[in-house]
Length: 613
Image (tube, rainbow, N blue to C red; front, top):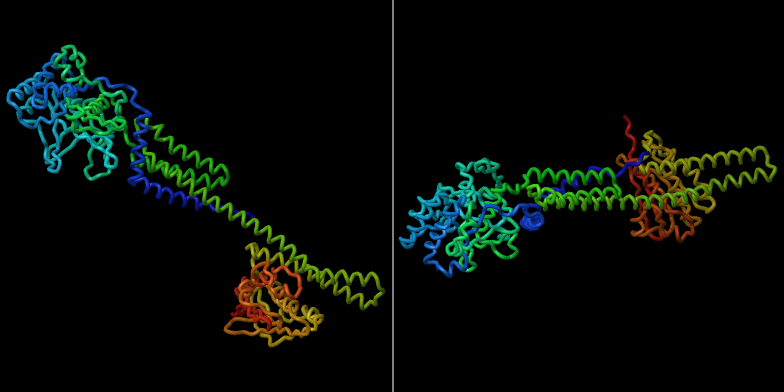
């Protein structure tokens, strides 16, 4: 019979369950944080190749604050913009909320300076709590070419600013990000366009990311320049005419960078613990837009497809190979899951780590554990089969002693003595009978073994149990006579049963021979059959030492020897009753045992009666 390998379907089931568990884990807060940390680390590992080229931060730093103070800051801004007029910047983005009126003279000066530059972008802010826009003051609004919002979008879990919202809307008013409006001014582009997948500024396009939140804001990952953005102090611009040349033909971001006065200091992946001001963040955003240097987040369906492929390849490896190569395949899948984000990141695609890595690891571990237990089970089964067949050989050799002894003794009589023709025929007949019994015994044992392994179909022929009992009693009577045991046959039911007569003869004879073997001399063994409620019962009872409840529970267990066998001094392997039990079970019946210590035992074969059609 061809041996079957381990089933393959469980590996795919384990893989599917592992993948679902890994995907569910990939949506947890811990998984999102792991992906964020991996993003930050990868961003530093693969920084942008080109440094900042167009953006310059015109910084209201500590020196500027000490020189002009908060009260006269608008006059300082007006002076700086006057200097910028001669430098002809591409655009000027002012990251200050000029929503309130100050001194008339200073406001007039600042508004006039804005009009000279013409390409000025002012800032708007959403008031926390109310959701209202804080727009530029009426005197400044006409001087501005555009208004952009100055919001960053710190991550919900760790507060790191990895992306910004490209637009914000409230009460029917929508503003694009300050950096986008600056890019529009610098390129002389028309209105900013948008689609479900990108935002366009003239010939520039920005891929967008829709986060999993109700607001559905358009978010853009920021590739921060590792060397930062060039800074020019507003005080230097005012007091040193040559400083304006550093701003020539640049996009200038004017804002507060003072350590003590800046309100919007945010942590970024590149800040290394030192917060970055909002005006610097917007300058980085502009550089990413101008250089078309973006990170596109991998689509969810691509992540799911990758997880499915990794899981399928790992499960298939274990299902088809089932050796050390399976573990090698799983290790390769784990390596792929970890290497894929590093392969795609330099190509502008941010691929999450947690879900694919969790799928690869969990599938590999679970399939490896299942394979271990399958191999362990097969090893235990192999060891059990080896032990069973060793003991089976012992059993066969033990059972063959009786017919072999009879054949050997009879042949010696025929060779040593001159026997009459009648005696020679009698001995020859016995030799023939015992050799046939030996052959049947071997065949019966082999049939029982094949039956237990499911390798043989049971015969289904009608036969009379009464005839089986009579044949077995006559075969066992010589054994009983040697021990002066009265082998008494009681009432025998004439009903037929269906099955294999040779196997049933083996079962009945085994019970009879055991009863005689383990009974004291000059006792009695009773055999009887009866039919009750469609069940035919063959009972064999003796007057031996009996068995207690503990032993009765182990009856039928292969190779278990009872105490009566030990005390009687009879040799045996404990396999006979287990074979009897198998035979009866395959006939649709059962083997009942009742026993009382010191009074004997009764074994009863219960099989269904053949119903006449």
